[in-house]
Image (cartoon, rainbow, N blue to C red; front, side, top):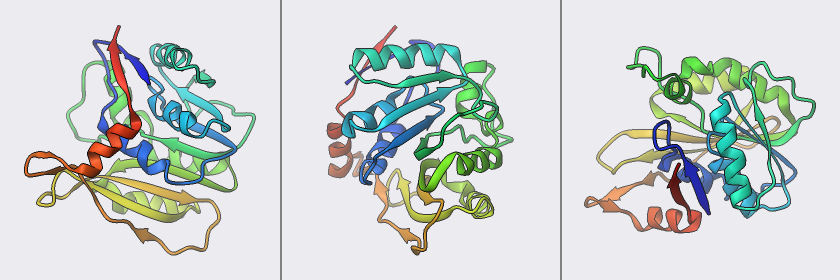
Length: 229
């Protein structure tokens, strides 16, 4: 798949590809909402693999939704793309799956002077508690929420998910290598579930300074190419 990106501005990174791989191990069906879709890569990759789903993507930045539509057309994938603030948009439907790679730079971290980069990276642009609460309300009964976040904020994240009545089913940490703490956490949560939480084996990016075979296979499966505009 080809993904057009702006030469100057926020660009998707490997986190999104790892999240796509995490999502794709589940049986994705029905309707799916991709929040903060950016250039569209996450939702479009999932739709490519699960062609029968009804895909909706939303982003607050018009420049991103223009790019999202361009990428959907370039890859012959149908997606309903919405330009709006997720927290204020009045959705007329509910969803079976909601996925997201939301902004998670915490308060106090160095802020970009570029508004586009700020909206894409910093949690202040999408307050996590409000984000989780609205996500819960938009899911159908037994609906699933799959996303990634800063691993250092996991304690607060789990409290907010529990308060919103989500049940966390699976967690997977991402490590640069086995000698470093986790940098990212991927979470699979459901509206209604009695399953105990599984901590999956970690996703380790590098061994002896090169990508692990597992990571190489993820990139091979995603099969993406970027082109600047």
